[in-house]
Length: 241
Ligand SMILES: Nc1ncnc2c1ncn2[C@@H]1O[C@H](COP(=O)(O)OP(=O)(O)OP(=O)(O)O)[C@@H](O)[C@H]1O
Ligand SMILES: [Mg+2]
Image (cartoon, rainbow, N blue to C red):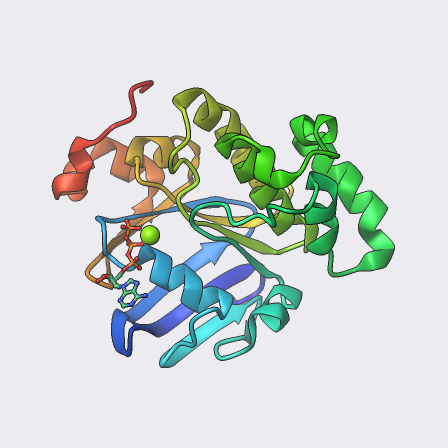
């Protein structure tokens, strides 16, 4: 069954000429959140870059609802239904919030509807739509980045380090947004430095270690057995949990 599934199969992704993602296989279902956890340097960002076509995989398949997009260009992958929010919310700083969102639309005839949907999900952005994105707070920029991803009407949305550099109160605001995105039917892959934050919103979880999937299962199971997440990064938990 490959419908309603982002199916990663034996994906190898290089950085600096050598593979750092070593044959990752992972199923990301539509309409649910899958948390991707792992220590610094495990290959989480490289996996996202490979899936989004920003780094060309060396081998393996990336099936978006059955269509293998491995090796395709980023824009074509977005059109196939896979969008990524890269690490560090890379918004177009010299553009207004509105123009950042418009720039991400793939179907111009649907722009008004998409803007309305996005502002319903993130009403904060409607209030600041005329502001230059470079003048926004980190939390506001992350909202713009998520909204950009949604403007391409993805079936799957990959979010790399949602909470990076953000205050706990902002993270608390963004997590329900992630859940709402999944409730719209979008399959979310959520990369988070804080396992507890990601597992609170996720149904599924995968642990990456040195470029390989070490464990996959339900988020509940990982919550109940945190020892699965051995390693140094477990020690860090956000102050609000
Ligand atoms: N531009 C690059 N050139 C060469 N090697 C890189 C590059 N970017 C990352 N790497 C290496 O690839 C491996 C995986 O890094 P990656 O950034 O994907 O891990 P990560 O799980 O996202 O880590 P973090 O939690 O720190 O974000 C690491 O060994 C890293 O040093
Ligand atoms: Mg990373």
